[in-house]
Length: 192
Image (cartoon, rainbow, N blue to C red):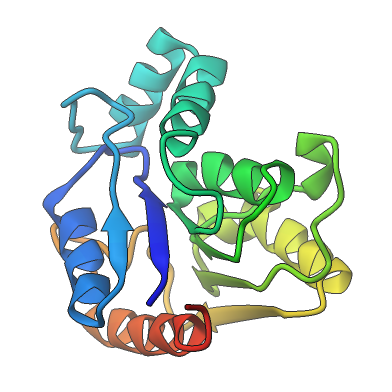
């Protein structure tokens, strides 16, 4: 089974993130879910991003990198929205990653000063009309990453919600999440 490191979204470590991790644990995977917000949880993206601005964007990203260095190198990095940043950075720059799961977000690989490791498997998931994913360049970055990777998949789901796989939020979409989980479990099956 795989060892997975999940980074939470801008609202913090919500019960929905814990539930998602538990679904992967039921499949036999070891899942780590660090709290980069030190206990703070927010109800709006704006409030969560205000907290990130307060602690510093670079500091938030480095918190993710620091906690990852306490774990083995042969790991799957996963990130939800804002959590994609440390997940993608580590996947691109830390030797040993064995897979990457990017939910609701993707950034240009050039942001981390190195190309995507061509042999590193990656899945990217987002809703086809999510304004954060589609209008802010994430979908374009995802397509660019796909073009540079040998094992990459992009899944677009019907709808316009951003954090649709977090069961503790009003944006939760049970059908899309069930399909997303099925795809993630399939992705993880050969990674052991």
